[in-house]
Structures are given as structure tokens and as C-alpha cells.
Amino acid sequence: MRSSLLSIAALLLGVVSAAPADPKPATAAVPKPDADGKYWIHGKGISAAFVPYGASISDLLIKDKNGVVRDIVMGFDNATHYTLDKAHAHLNGVPGRYANRIKNSTFEIDGVRYKVAANDNKTPEHPQGLNTLHGGPDGWDWRNFTVSAYTNSSITFSIVDPDGKEGFPGEVVSFITYSLGDMTWDFKMVAIATTKKTPIMLTNHGYFNLDGFSNDQTNLALNHTFHLPYSGQRVDVDDILIPTGDILANKKGSVNDFWSKPKQIGASFNDPEIINNCGGGCVGYDNCWLVNRAQNGPYDWRKDGYVASLSSAWSGIKLDIYSDQEAFQMYTCNFQDGTMPLKKSQGLKDNAKFPRTIPKYGCLVLEVQEWIDAINQPQWGRSSKQIFEPGGDPYVLQASYRFSVA
Image (cartoon, helix red, strand yellow):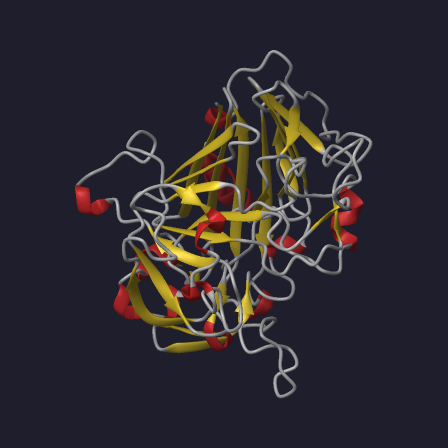
């Protein structure tokens, strides 16, 4: 039964189609990482490395407008560091089985109330936390995935999440495939509920700086320009980032207006509205914008425009994100404290102008995903996209990150 399920999941994921014929496929029985424990894949004008811990991307190499190779994602030089990092910022991995926050660490399915492990918003009265973030204290991005397939241009990770793990009902089998093409990074995530109804919502929690953390004018990412053309609305949250159930309008010209025209991330930081925008006392962004493409009729997510775009005039690198998901989260690294080190591939080599660490606002997290905590907001009508059962449709997330250089 298990092998049959895995075979079906692999076919649904498109492992074969995601990895086109390759002149140099990996032929070893056991896929081999490099000396730092990283698995490298390559496309035209782009290379990337991954680690099994969290099925995480650890390096993403693109040439900037001057032909200099920039590593534009946060990470560590060695795969072992991911397992030792006590801060655990969900670094470029796949949080699961339910990404983002779950209010009161509870949800209900068919009249049965489930309590999952808490790990967010810790208080003296609730030392473990009030809510669950990214699947709990031992969510997917705390665990090692299995490398199931590996070629020169594609890698597939798999995980089996047992019934009852972190309190979630039922077993889930998941495959994550990353592939590189012509200046593109594509990924597809498939998860199958095998024994019970259960919530599933995944994403890639990637930390970006399109300057490769090497800008000699600023070590912040607030100079990046951001655009969300379909996102005139966002999910309202309370002071600890739990959805209230309300959907808010991003009025033209307001702090959260990235739809009417592209603007720099830091353009509204002098607006009083930015205070508490990302939670109580927080200045910046950690918001879930809705992607309202359906209002224009049927669409092909691969062709009918990006859901988000990020660019830097300094490096000339631009990232257009295409996805089948109907929400998008952007976080301005409000809790970076200058202790996270740069990799050897990043930073200013001959200039001590900035420390070789990442400061507050020095990076941006970009997440394609579903509406956050919709399992506790039935009036939103998202159950068919977040609750999955044996014999039903699988959970599927698809995204294409398309790079260009001005």
C-alpha cells in the first residue's frame, strides 16, 4: 500500500516531466552532495543548491547587471549548520504540514476538535505558546527530507508525516520538486492525505536579497521595488498576527498598496500607518495579501501575469513570481538582529563598511500560499483548498520564479 501511494504521488508530482532529459543525470544509487552537504542543480544562467533539512534552498546564483555572480538567498555555508541553528528562522525550507499560524493551536474537522502543538507567542501563562506557527515545534522544516530523485537540473525531496505528529490527524505523504530552466526556478509541491481528513498548506519560506547582500550603499533590502498587481485586499490580523476574520481593502496610496503601481519596500516607512502594520509594536511588513485574479475571469497561472514582482535597481536583478496560489505573504525580516552571518559567497569582500551579518530589514521573505488560518475561518469558503482526505484530490502548489536582469 505504501509503495503504491508513493508511486501515485510521484506521478502526480510529475517527477519525470519536471526533470527533462539531461546529458549528465545522476546515476549513483545514492545521490551525492558536495563537500558541504549541498545538492547542486543547474539551468541556463542560474544555479542553486539544496539541503535535505526542510527541503531548503541554500544558495541561488544569478549574474547581476555587471556580470557579477550574486547569491541572493540567505543560508549557511555548510548543511550541518541548518540543524544546529537554534534561532531557526524557517530558513528557505518547506513549513508543514500547515504553514503560517493556527489560532489557539486548534481547528475543527467534521465536528471533531483537534489540538496541535503550540510554539508561537509564548507567555508566562502559556510557556509553549498561544498559537501554532509553521506546523509546530517539530514541523516539516525542522526535519530531514529524503532525496527521492536527482539530476543535473532537478531534485525531488519526500517526507512521510505520521498520524498524530504535532497533533495533526492522519498520515500525509509529500513530494517537493525543484527544477531550474532558462533563468527560472520552478517548484511543485504535492501532498496526499492517506488515512484521515487533515489540513495541509505548504509554501517555500525563502529569504531574499537581490543585491546578494553586497550593496555598498545599504545593507538593507528596503531599496527593493515590490509589485502585487492582483492584491487590492489583505487578511486582517490582530497584534499577534492571528486573522480576525475580516478582509481589508488596501486603499490606493496606503502603506499596503503595492497593487496600483510598483513601489520600494521602504517607501511608506515614514507613514504613521506602518506602525503596528506587522503586529503590535511592529514597523514593517508581515502580511498576507490576497491574489484576486479570478475577478477577471479564467486565467492560466503560467501565462497570465505574475502575482508578485521584486526588483533591485542596484543589481539590476528582477524576480517575477507566477503561481497557482491565491495569497502571497511578504515579510521584511523585522526580527533579524544582526547575528545571522553571511555566506562566503555574499557581502563586501574588500570593504568593512557593513558587518558580515544580516540586520533588521536586510532581507525579504516571499511566500506563495493559501489564505492563512482559513481552517478557522469557515465563512471564507476555503475548505476545499485546505482540508484533504484519503481518496480525494491531492494538495498541489505550483510556482515559477522567473529572473531577468535589467
